[in-house]
Amino acid sequence: MPALPSAALPCVPGLPRLGCSTINPLLHFQKGMSAFKMAQLCKTILRKKRRLSESQATQSQPKLESLGDHPLALPQSPAPEYSIYFSHQKSNSSRLGPEFFDQPAITLARAFLGQILVRRLPDGTKVRGRVVETEAYLGSEDEAAHSKGGRQTPRNKGMFMKPGTLYVYIIYGMYFCMNVSSQGEGACILLRSLEPVEGLEMMRQLRNAHRKGTARALKDRELCNGPSKLCQALAIDKSFDQRDLAEEEAIWLEQGPERPEEHTVVAAPRIGINYAGEWALKPLRFYIQGNPSVSVVDRKVEQEMQASS
DNA sequence: TCGACGATGTTCT
DNA sequence: GAACATCGTCGAA
Image 1: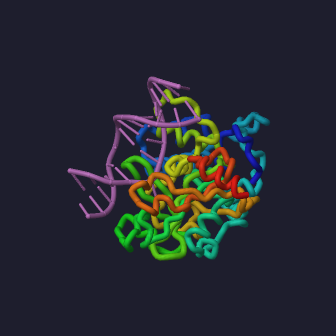
Image 2 (image 1 turned 135 degrees about the horizontal axis):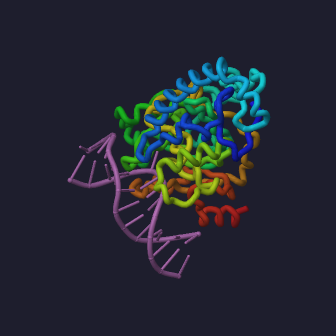
Image 3 (image 1 turned 90 degrees about the vertical axis):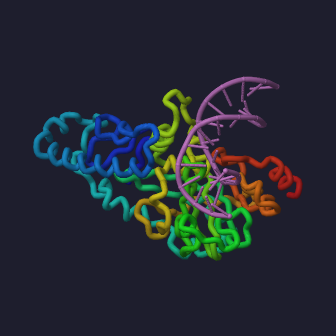
């Protein structure tokens, strides 16, 4: 699928571009609306779009053709690659399968760095982000893990499912965090930050839907620089819990174009787990040094790395 | 840029 | 009833 200009709002193939009419779901996105409701809204609007498209095809074709190169004009003869049905297959050529996730937590947390997380929204729009920060949770022995002591509850069931299973939970009653289970009983990887790659305007609108109307504009690096921010930007909610990242059609992981070099990966203590005693100090957070989208830079660890090299 | 603080409701003991 | 793998805002430097 040809790349869209970064500033362009995403469009559904063969349909009017989003952001220009009352059928843009984001115009209906109300403060406090959950991502799940957003997904339902998108589905409803997509159905309306299809009906509208069929209607336009039979009634308004001459008017649309007269738009020429106008951004609202439909493609003269839609190529197969514009179809959401074809683009899916094509874009998945580098998709990472179940064997990728079947690694021990620490190895997998490092392996995630540089890979591309792709989310297909209900209207077919895709957003992409490069993984730049992860945390490993080792399961039963790990005092900071939700699965510590082998504790299994309805909430954390995804942690115990096969590698590649998503564990999405609500934190502080208002945010989501996304984990991916790995090899090892109750072990998983927390995805903490992404570097936005594609669909930045859609990410920005999804993020703004959770903020006050008067808030300042978000910089690109602020779109996904935190575990709950990336969930907002990719419209990931509790409905993704226990889905399989290796098989799911709405979200998947692709091989990144370049992996970070080993000496640029920082291993630092995890964030927000001060209650976990000695486990709070273990270097189980991994991030790409110097990447602007990393949520928390650990200057001390980076200085130690520099001194020892 | 950094630190303090309040919002928020699910989950677990 | 307490804890919580966070975030946005505000004020100070």
